[in-house]
Image (cartoon, rainbow, N blue to C red; front, side):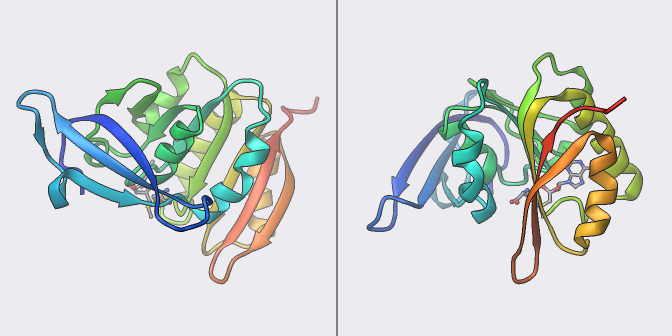
Length: 198
Ligand SMILES: C[S@@+](CC[C@H](N)C(=O)[O-])C[C@H]1O[C@@H](n2cnc3c(N)ncnc32)[C@H](O)[C@@H]1O
């Protein structure tokens, strides 16, 4: 677990024989004393969500590459997108938001999404919608709609919601559903932002 400091470097290593999956090795270094802060000698292994890996070739067609990872947790998805060339905003609560910055990856608080200057091309939200309150969900989805670029993608993976409930929360904000699949315990839905139809 990263306990604080500045995220200084990310290296990637293929851990399987095919070159598909990537495990990311994250080194967290406290710039004040150059001490490695994370456990296991400063190395943390994380893997992105399967759903993100599946859809990223589609996302890569976006003209701009700005991504928002809502409820970024240990940054596994943020790091993956960063590695793929995205400028990433990793959004989480203050206690999770210990890494301050690195080029093209910023950790921000939910209330800071509103103030972002860039339009967002890809938003991912894996295993978060089911743990936040209804008012947090509505607040996030409303703000997201203001910040998405037209044609931008919104990937949701969650437990505890049916497709129709997700659609009823997300489509009225200006999204259309473009794909959906069910995992063993989760539902994975890809939306695209088309803006509000007047
Ligand atoms: C189950 S973890 C999922 C982390 C990550 N998305 C993943 O798939 O590995 C849920 C994350 O949502 C964050 N979270 C909880 N409430 C939140 C809120 N109101 N706004 C943003 N993030 C929140 C938690 O701190 C936690 O890091």
